[in-house]
Image 1 (cartoon, rainbow, N blue to C red):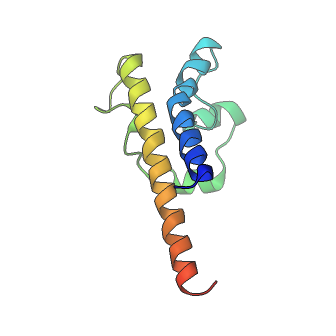
Image 2: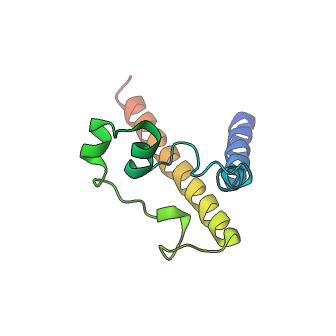
Length: 111
């Protein structure tokens, strides 16, 4: 592993560990949901309408860890923080694997 790759992996790991800030900051500032994690109902309250595309595809995807909880219900903040970190690590791994596979495919085909 090159020094750049080591720094990249370390940076991604630190970002995953910091990801629970997305839970704590809205609580500390009484801001409601984390930024960008709004449901269609919340958007309707905030904007007065739900964008057409969101309304059309809102039920298409179900999160593997809904509300960052392993059991699907509200959990203690410490467990929720752990689930948030797990979500971040899984996201990094999935995106990293996709980038690796695309790069490998392109390099084999001379692109």
